Length: 447
Image (tube, rainbow, N blue to C red; front, top):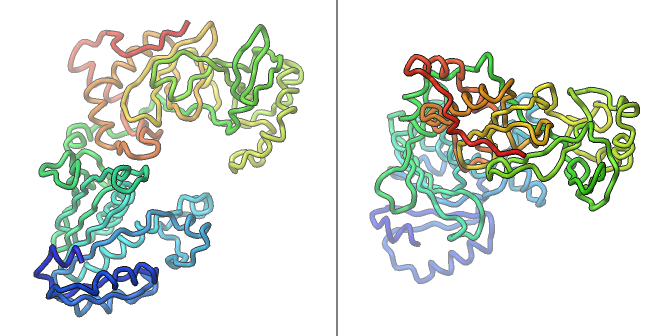
């Protein structure tokens, strides 16, 4: 009714939902409807309805508005719903990716993509409430498949205020025509007049800030010398993360104290510690120095540590990730010589800021990170400061800003970090001015 009252020149209205109760409520509201636009209301299944036939005879331009389900196909399956699209590999994932869940997708993503396809032979507009991450995926799919799209906009919505849910949301609007623009203006709220950024497809990349991208795209290339790594992945913090309570005594997340050798225990910084400038308060037990190393060697060099791991072996054995299958017992991942480097340049992967830190040894021992931190292992303090200053420079900041979508669950990914040609940026900086170590980059004052 609201749509028909606003678009008073509309010649026909149609509404559907799979839930009979919702349809009855709507029909009751329409019982007193006095508008001049005829409206058809019915119960219908989105996934089985022949939309192409229904839309074929509609007068143009067509406006499709709605609020599709904000759940994934697997979540609907868990809820026992059979209202799902056909079991196709929606994103054409290869075998392993499909098996490990990367082919899981939001139902709204599939639905909005289909709506845009409907209008490829029609003049019309799709306007949908959805998560911002879904909107970007829909747009990327349309751009990559060269769909007709003259205008695309995203108006951000405070979903906590309006829907009492914690999810970044927007009103996605797509206007079809014979033109094929591959940009989308993003507005801070529904009533905003000026966009806060323009995203788009450039050189096969989904770009978060087109202006920043154009200034820095010459720096896209993997660095040959500097290698980004992720912190240690163990998936059992209650066992593998401990606090020191006395000489050789450590208490774990279960509140139980054990006497352990110091050999495999390293000062730990989580992403939250790093981003907030905190010193290590816990230690991580790292039983391997490389991926796949047998842990039986601990019997000779750290027997108490091995007994500790055996004591909690049932918890470690229950780790569900497939990466532990077929690996030595008590295995962890993200370990190598780089893990134990005394100097590192690091960034918190889950925090919404581009800030790189220099991390040195803590009380004479290398600091290790969990898997919410990305880092480069360094040889010495001087080189670490130089690299951190470079990564905190305006040029590097613009480069990363051109690709970062801050509403992502993990905005700072290894793939993003590795895409910057650090060697090229270093050479460019050296050519522009005589570089000196300013130590403007923050160093955690580890003592």
